Length: 178
Ligand SMILES: CC(C)(COP(=O)(O)OP(=O)(O)OC[C@H]1O[C@@H](n2cnc3c(N)ncnc32)[C@H](O)[C@@H]1OP(=O)(O)O)[C@@H](O)C(=O)NCCC(=O)NCCS
Image 1 (cartoon, rainbow, N blue to C red):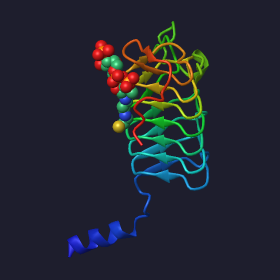
Image 2 (image 1 turned 90 degrees about the horizontal axis):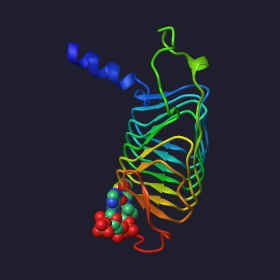
Image 3 (image 1 turned 135 degrees about the vertical axis):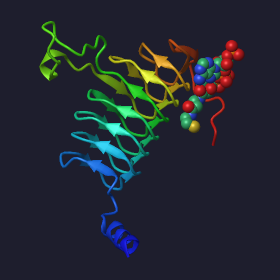
Image 4 (image 1 turned 90 degrees about the vertical axis):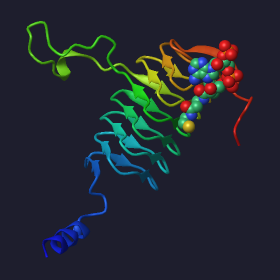
């Protein structure tokens, strides 16, 4: 009896019970969301697909027809243009010298630090497990290898990899998996 009750209850729950989408999020047409996603104050463009356990913070923008793979963190200050691929567990950064507390020992608030911007240009791809430091631009159609730590701007159409990420080649034409 008790079991039946529980099942009935769970069936009544809304389909998106595991989605946390704040009312201020601007979602484009045809956006596809997996479960366990946390979005607030951000914009996501038409037809973009977002995997499970992705968090996108306020004032972050993701363009149209992007693919954001599971476990990725897109913080405030990140601007991602259209047709961008983001692999699994990619981390963006928006504070180069983070501190928990102020000089006086109180927990820092938004007034105590300034968001640093990061840009990912149209058609770029970022490999899984990469960390993108703040204030860099990943150029149009560039490809960042898996596990890279990107510390500097990535030229358009180039392939970079490693920690720190270095240019492997200056065009992405080779070995396109289609
Ligand atoms: C970087 C990448 C695109 C390959 O580019 P490429 O130009 O074809 O590179 P190659 O395979 O010819 O390798 C060139 C050199 O870079 C090294 N290399 C390749 N990928 C690397 C990476 N991710 N990190 C560090 N070094 C890497 C190779 O070992 C090789 O080194 P060597 O010259 O000392 O032998 C690919 O390895 C990669 O990381 N792709 C991302 C995959 C991904 O994350 N997909 C997302 C979800 S499935």
